[in-house]
Length: 133
Image (cartoon, rainbow, N blue to C red; front, side, top):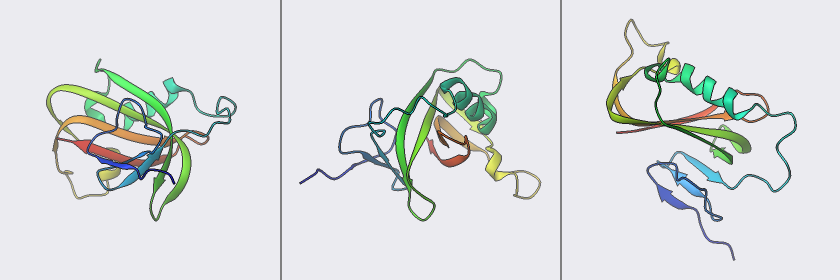
């Protein structure tokens, strides 16, 4: 019998075999054992997309980590290989993410210490994001 995914607030540095549920939103599992090196966006491309997504990290040098995982975002995607990109900010920053552009004149500013966003490994499309305060 397999172990249930752990519930966590932030993406861990390594996905445990049992997986994790981040902020009750998405399930991250180890990437599939088959090679994902063919026909996927590169780590650098994923980081570039994340920099465009989180405006506060554009043109700045923040520590960043990117790892491959299978992502399930219930109701949206199921076990999709994706790049999980996390930026680490030393102090709380205000961030406006692209998905908030639909809001009236000024999207809310959110204090942020860690920003994580997932992009589909094969298409580069947005999957899910997490903000840690």
